[in-house]
Image (cartoon, rainbow, N blue to C red):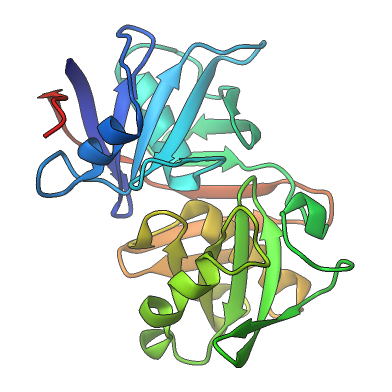
Length: 278
């Protein structure tokens, strides 16, 4: 099966974007893993599949991690999605309504080419994350191989466990991230975020993403970290989030309010691949 695709990235968090409206791909787990494979396929953190909306939204899109599993939400992917449908003339609206597995999002293409996404209101109730806890709390202790770490648990349409660290460069992202991702308290697994507070309007962040490992940037992770920092009284309502690959701006006005994320989306190249399973 020959499949046309576009390679894109948001601050280095890279995607294979597939138009599922003008072509009809079959993407089972093997095909998805091949697309994501950096040696035998195209290589990416996630695959984004664009589809016609099922309700009254403008589009629907589905998100698959490199391991072939479908996930609910992706902030960097949402920005790339908007850039893609605009560049290909699939819409002339600056603001569009998009169905995702994690709920409706409303991204907007800005005059400077960046994209702002209304990511919806964060969720904190353990059953909504989902997270195994008796009741909602500001932070939770989590046992990692006999050592306790303190996390904030929040859903941005997908689950996040955020912890504060004093030195991000020496944070145990690669050794501890996978243990948090697969911790039994998170029945659907979790994205593990490590946040260093520079000042009240600036943080640095690394994220070990569910099903992908550490990525260069994570949009929903940035939103979750800012929300967690604001709730703990560490941050103002507008925060610059610095990844190793660049910055996002995240705004949140508090409980029951949506989180707004602004950042770039870049097209790398277009191509076609023959999806033969080796």
